Image: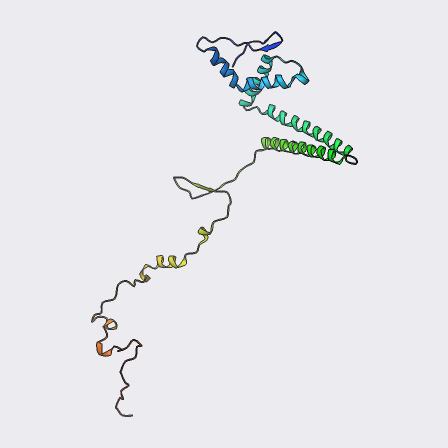
Length: 226
């Protein structure tokens, strides 16, 4: 969003913008309120007074917009410089807090502990900043092993261990699938006939009379020559 030069009026910073005929003033102010570049510039002006003095909002907005445009084009020099400088500043904070902790360690143990806790927090933030910078310079490479090749949805396994269901050994079913003729069917009884004497029904005279399987049949002597 383009903006005109800023001017000081009554000791306050004002941002002048060109009027657009097809847009109301309220609409323009609402767009400025949610504009990331305007919010960043206002924050820089507010927090930069202690070190840089009174900054002009328009020049600050132009500088912020230029940095954002470079990043959108793929130039990551600005963010990399920010991370490097922040890591350096955090390391300086850690050094100062650790020094104060050492000065109070012999006599004021509570103050020494507080300083050391703050120093270690600064150290952790410094480490996280360096790790972020390393990730930007050398992005991690993810190698995925692809399984279930098909035209539809595909499953990607990142080297995980197979589940128990996949290792289940179902050999009996496999044997029955390969030897269909050996399937056992107990639902249908065989029909006796003359072609198969082994299936001829036993006559009533040859059956056992009780459930123990033993009938009244007595062994018979076979007469003949010795």
